[in-house]
Length: 443
Image 1 (cartoon, rainbow, N blue to C red):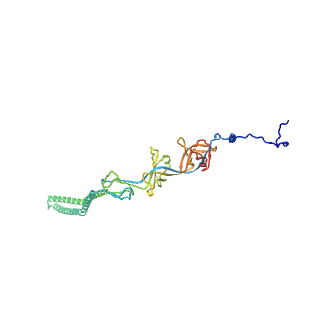
Image 2: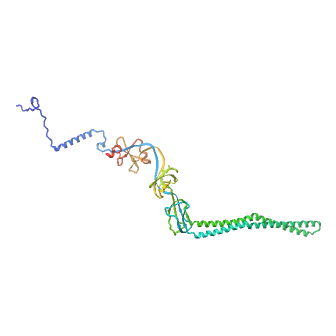
Image 3: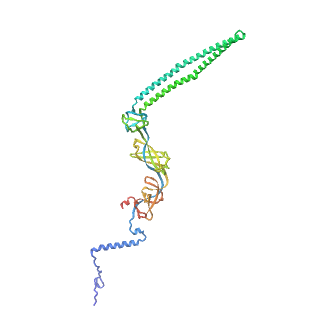
């Protein structure tokens, strides 16, 4: 007996039907699909044997932005903090001690050079000035009298004495000559001739004395007398000028043009010759004093262009002083930058930033300042994107900084791709993905 059953679709009119699969429970269908997909992923990972160990472990790549290190010229600008001082300032100390009679200015007032600021009590000094003036006028009058009256009278008398002495000498000479002639004829005794000789000698002596006195008046005596009289005039004049100066010390005037910065006393208080009465500062020009490292100061010269940046002001000036000595405490050099303070915007004592133009550095390796990171040893480093799609840490030595550009002295070569975004906290040889600007934020 044939037990095979014929089915429709087979030969002989019997139909062929596919065998039925056992129906899976509905809850287990998604689980089977998940296992199937996991098996496919595992086979794909096994087949990719050429990838790195990090990829095999499934580490996600960090999106970064890079910039290419270039060899170019960078402008060297040296910046430093500085303190502003006035170029010209004056502390006014009275030359005399006296109470303040009046003040003509207040703190903050603008004053001109030579302007009267205050007046001290000076009644006694005015009286001394008047007395000295009278004494001076008296000396002048005495000198004029000496020149006009006394000296001519003495000179006239001296000339008269010379004439009388000459006449007496001539008369004595005639008497002697007559007696000498009579003595030769035997008509006169020798004694009379000797007496005439003595009288002649005396007359000659008187004449010589008169001549000498006249010469003294005409030369030495007259000049000395006139000089003595003039000396008295000069002494009286000097005394008078001293009294005038003493009286003028009661008037306090400004030695410079500027602002009244301080006025410690009030009206009626005693001004002392050992304490300041006013402090005047001229802030139309200011100087910023900065302490600069020795290496940077070596590139500075007097006359180098510079700017001063402070609260609400930016002034253009130049370097005026580069100290030849190094401060042993800070190992820095003091540099002065002077500028015109237009509008008096910067005040003395304020802290500012000075920028000194040190010229260009040619053929420098330049990277963006955003590429610099702090290293663990206190130095600086950059992260370089390598061709192996890994980040490589390089310690660098930094040179000139100018805004967003930095010169690298060592550690980076031209053409290297330095990471400028995403490098913070990135480990050495970490997997990276170079993204375009803005793409990493989207990710």
